[in-house]
Image 1 (cartoon, rainbow, N blue to C red):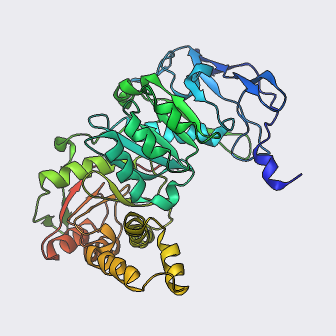
Image 2: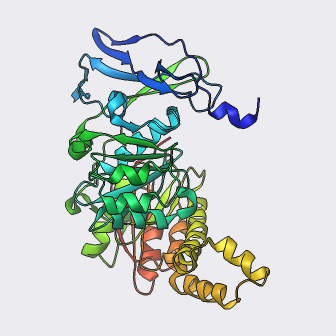
Length: 429
């Protein structure tokens, strides 16, 4: 068998049709989700569940919560009949494309988890491997999507596009220029599918409840983590508590009897970027930092073991992606192709020099941005790196023994950098 063929096969699975999970005397009832799909090779209709799990040799099944209510302590968990991804029916797949696997559906879910806090304006989120490549808001849907795309055009290749407004023709035509695995929207206007279906493997998904997604922001659910010994860890899902300006806390610290307070409070614009960035970062694998400017991500660093390393990687990515975006907008080709064509004598070196000068001037697009961190800064090294790149504000949970050092670093900056605390950590593993 050719190795590439394993990605096209559909793996058999033997998971039961129903699951019951019991918490004491409370029960939750689940039903396995399958779809009737036409197999073009066999020329027959077949009942199918997930293509496979995370890898082509892992069987997997999708279950929808269909019954039961769960109350633990003072927390009432999400009720049945609110299905999003788990409730997808055949008619919701406007094009099945290459039959969906676990990652396709968890990518959609990851995008919805971010978008649910960004419903006030047209918003776009491009997800890859359950992490955002780029997230942005705009005055129009196509503007939001283009901004999210250019935040990391390289990573967006083959990504999952999640939109919070009905897909219009202009946005559909824009999408059709590029290769994506999945497109999700609450509705598709007449004529949009003609553009999207030029990609025969594209999964085109309609989730009508996206227009009510803000309702899910306060609905906790149960999360399970399975251990290698068969055990499980259960936790309540994360609920974002930082959604409006008054949720932000003053950046101050007490150290050896002395109070340290930030000199400059964030502006309205910085606060808006802080709230936007906090909505994004709660959907990013930890340790993570996000740089945000004008309600669009500039750079996202995911899953790092040390926080200063996360800042370093985000800065490196910002410069790399900004150069690529400039090359793509100016010449219609990636930055690495621009370099190659100059080496081959097909382009003048001035093309690259102009882009490099712009990248240096704008510091990879980080100049004037806001730094968001999902956990506190244990040392001042990360913030100082970001300050040197021209950020104007920082949002972080606070609570480090060295908060006073970070405050002093912000106050020493010229001009001083604003900072606020959330009082909430949002690790995601």
